[in-house]
Image 1 (tube, helix red, strand yellow):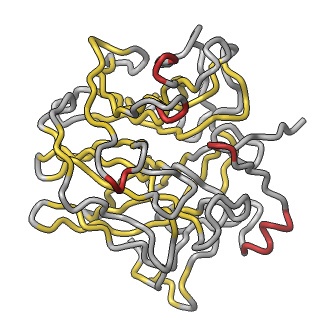
Image 2 (tube, rainbow, N blue to C red):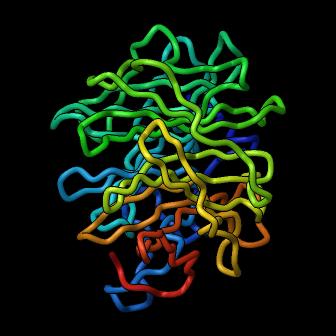
Image 3 (cartoon, rainbow, N blue to C red):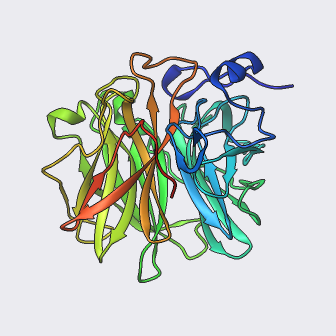
Length: 341
């Protein structure tokens, strides 16, 4: 029986056939049509027009695999694409949750490849014992899964700090493996910190002690920061993050520069680098990919005026990031036709 999921921070995510037709999307058997008019070299955002919050993608071979927060009765929806533009639904990457977790609040999954036949998925899920959101990890032999979490309990919970969410794995240039996450302090009215900690070589356990990197301090951030990820560009380590309320137009994306995966980190003066405009509202919780030497940002955004809506929800956007004097500049949200990656 298909269960009903409760989408992140209280917005439901039930996708029905009629809504898909209205949105111009398919049932998953065909790629989402995002070509711009009759010119196959161009595309127009959003690249997924149905609900696809908190997106992250990895490339394996010639295929991109994208994971996002629960929707449509799936714990971890997975989509595939040959080009980052045309996406096809590919089922549930995590069809079975571990015994210690409750269904309905499975958020912000991110995957990493550790070997040709070894993939890890870090995900946020409702921890039954703590009553808070916790971070789990699951393993698969193929990028689309199925991933399996055979652990006896969460990897990270931090229940006394509101829970732990938005885990993001990172392989640094020296080969070390790290995990970023956020304590869900806004759930209980305390500070929201972005944390990092080293992972063991197999990615299944944490090593040493966690480090606080940064918290909400700037007016544009409101009461929270979240959705962190690392990206190293020209040997500079950038920590990207989203801030403010996810269901408001003020939600946006910023970054900091860190000396190492354990900090210290300094926020950029030009933040936010991605914010609402006439094309999209509340853009954020991004991830970054590199294709043919060009850097692209995958992120979710609402249609303007439809913040917190169930349909279409938070759609998937793709915009290029250019590096000017070592600083990331996002060319978006761009709702006009633009060249494909």
